[in-house]
Amino acid sequence: MGRVAFIWDLEVDPDGNYWHICVEGHGVTREEVEEVVTGNYQIATQSRSSGQPEAFGWTASGKFLTVVFEQVSDDPLTVYPITAYEVPPPSPRKRRKR
Image 1 (cartoon, rainbow, N blue to C red):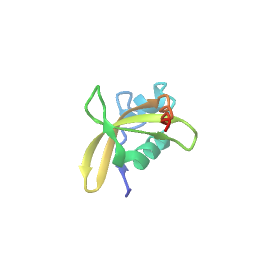
Image 2: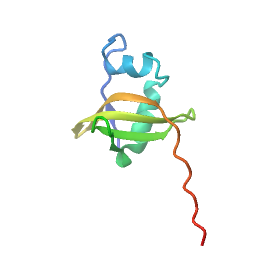
Image 3: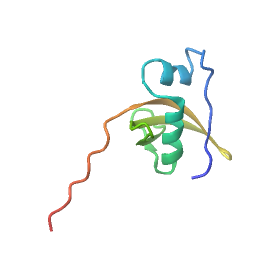
Image 4: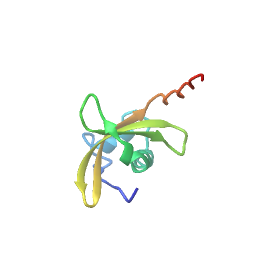
């Protein structure tokens, strides 16, 4: 996957995405959000609640996150993170008996 550019509101803006994701208790850093989206952008699904793209993935710190974002531009690929939080990791698929 190529480079993904991120749009973050000012860290002091209580109505912005940085404040919502990183300050209000989601326990997620900007770096973790960017890591999950960059690594899982191509397999992002659609959020059932908002209809926006949603990426799931592991962070280097060992968290499994979901990140809902808006795709702002294709060229260059630019996204605006809407929300991000830790979720339970997917359970391993059960093997079929043969």
